[in-house]
Image 1: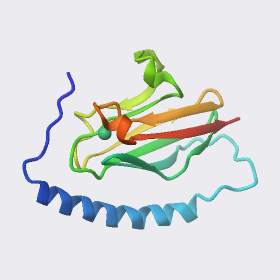
Image 2: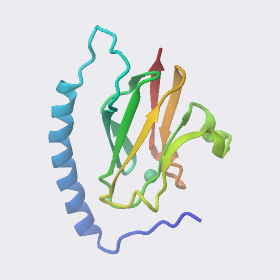
Image 3: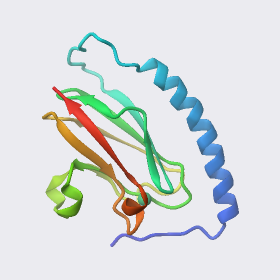
Image 4: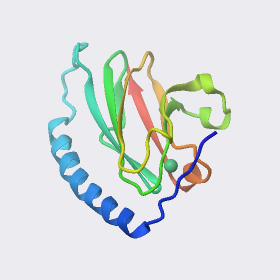
Length: 152
Ligand SMILES: [Cu+2]
């Protein structure tokens, strides 16, 4: 059901990848200073906070790994890699249970093709430990996983 399409032109893919990384590092450094944690607890907001996430071979680069429960977030996922990737947010440990209901939100590999940018909005109902993963064959094992923490 999941198709993996490898681009014929690896050379062009690498150039595009480098361009994306260069552009993203600028964006991420700008966001990093703008979204620094504050000591004051933020009240529930009506507008979601944007969290940039970059997928590549084979890793996720996420702007923050600590979140607040009951706060809406918009994950802005960019595939800066040369091949399609999947983005799944689930409870820690759900990866090995292969049960679809444990996925809290996801972007399929068919949607997250090379160069694609997709957003997903999510509000964590409960504090805990969660995981972002790409479950394409070999990708998770190669390092496409990131643990995130949700605090009350
Ligand atoms: Cu992947």
